[in-house]
Amino acid sequence: MTIAFVIDDNRQTADSMCDMLKLLGIEAYPVYGSRTAMLALTKKTPDLIFMDINMPGVSGFEVLSYVRREPRLQHIPVIMVTSDDQPQTAQRAQETGALLTMIKPVDIDALERILTQVGLLPPSP
Image (cartoon, rainbow, N blue to C red; front, side):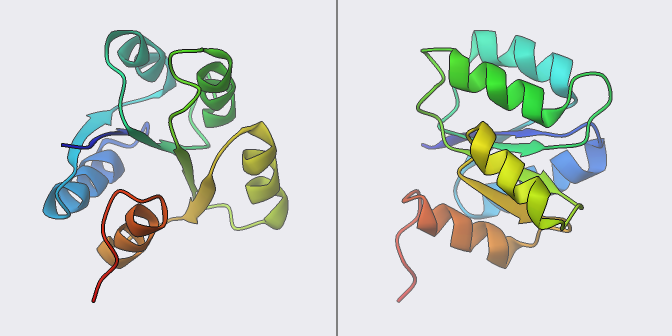
């Protein structure tokens, strides 16, 4: 089964995304905050990461940079999630190593499209 981490400092957002991912057949784990994410990534290697950009302390960009530098994690697709719809935010995410950027609020249809796009779900008939 595919394992995803949903990294967000907002517990409600992380839990909601995990619930939607579980409905789509993904084993999803909420990870509350960037520092907790760094620790979680040393213990478990997910198949996919959804990560908030704007978190207190260590930003999602900084966690993404860590993921891209770490040989054991480099291959993991990372989808950045943000309420910031400015083009430069998505561009910075891509330049830092994100596969895609999603704009909040995220719904189950958007998650299904993303999972299909990255090859973790078969295309709908």
